[in-house]
Image (cartoon, rainbow, N blue to C red; front, side, top):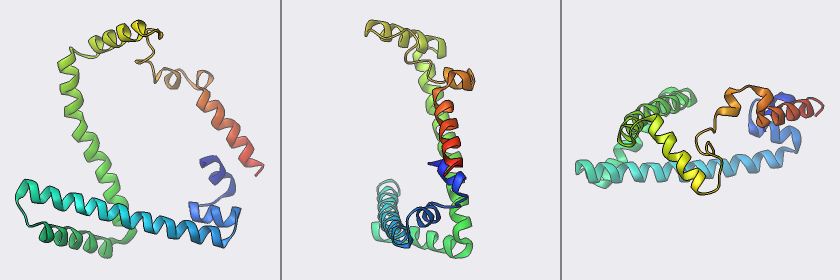
Length: 163
């Protein structure tokens, strides 16, 4: 959808929906997104309270109130900016959290070369090309002439310019 957003000069999905359809569609999308956000936030808060209850022995209701209070404070203090910074921080925390898992996994299988060798054996035994499961990034790294997604994106970009 990004080529359509760029082509229409919309800065958000609701703005694009209002331009493309009308105010009713934008309002429906906004209400649906708000409901989804409330449910997703509730599920996350529930999971965090259960985690604190199980790991640290905190009272579930107290953990839920403390976590909700912390979130309320930083949203009231910083607004949307604080939420964006939190998302960015979470991304880096997830990447740093997975780094040891990847390291330990590669160590257990004997390193990158050993892993690709094992994948080649499995691929050939199942009737696939030898590099079927280890060459996913090759089209991206080879440049746009070998990348069908770059070609599709360029077609969408040129189509959205006329939109």
